[in-house]
Length: 318
Length: 253
Image (cartoon, rainbow over all chains, first blue to last red; front, side):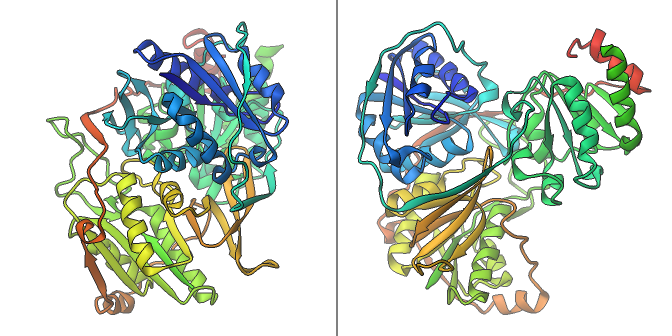
């Protein structure tokens, strides 16, 4: 039986998280499951389906083009997946807010457990997933017929996005369930890379003292081509919007370089970034727990250090 | 209208958990237990709906071992009106909890159910969505703002959700399941008089058998291990040294 991956997309392009989920699907397929199919459910979403069809190793792309699927409302999309489920052994989605919203609803309608946020594939029915903010790794075996899974993107390096040419097949579902209606989205606009796919991230915490001070981080971010993130404390204090939050219940990131500025290092924050390749901590408190996991620590006043860092990077870029 | 809030007893968020030597789970003996922080937010939201006159009663429900009663007492001390404990020694997974809650909801008939988006022990983030599916209700997940019956239609709820790209507002038909995100509210502390009052509030106890729900786990935990520990590195003395090390030693910039 085949493996179905629910694409993360904006109707125009397949988002990077889709490539991580396909990477997990590839491992499941190699463990003995069948072909990999991708579902693109949206409105006027053919461009996204065409992008998904270019992912090498994908056997087929299913497109469900219906106004009911435009905003990915779980009440509408879940029945579509339930209708497709009998053809599949595994249903996968990225563990993004969209995937986390949708997949448990699908699982319950199929009367199966969902397996959240897998970070490893052991076999067709056995997976590794972090629990307790990543302080333990559980290996779990599913006894259900269909495995409904969300995938932790940072644990599966993305597959290539170009080179394939899978056929695109139209499918349809029941459409609108009449339970929910999209009103509006207030999405952060930024020229910087997305947090979950950025190569470099610089994050600020409570030590930043105000939202205005984040411009100090942004200046450094722009020198490094980095995304800007934050700890929960900085988001709760209203310095920056919620979509900046890195941590156990925010975004999970694993960039090449993570620079934590004015972040003490609560376990909930570490849960979101400790798989980064290189971690730098800048903090005035030399006892801050963040230094215990940082590759490079710099103790001092961030309001002095950040402008210096900005100047030093500018000097080296000349 | 009634609100039903589900609360889970978990290892306190300040505890650094340790994996058991036999790799069957994490150490929970003699460890401080608390209400899941997202469920505190759920209770607070229920109380605010009652204070605003939107609901008349807030019912706190928990499922698990006898000690879960303490978690319900905490909810009652915060201000919930009464409690329901679904008592079982079986390890409960989200699908089973959703089925138990559905059975309680079929009896209590609330129009709004509020649950934390995620429990900080298993980090599943499933129960609310599963419950909504089983009830055939809409799901307002990861809520940062809930307004009920404020628009033209008293039967509607407008909920702002925290999503990866920012915020999203969706209109839902009641009845509804809401799951809470961090910015929805700041939960109150229980005052001493309220803690005393909570001791007299009623808690009903039922079992999964009485509710007719099969709670057999669908996932088997084969082992639980510690992740590879990250080693601390070095302290650098200056910005110049830091940049130079990132360039030549770590080669990441």
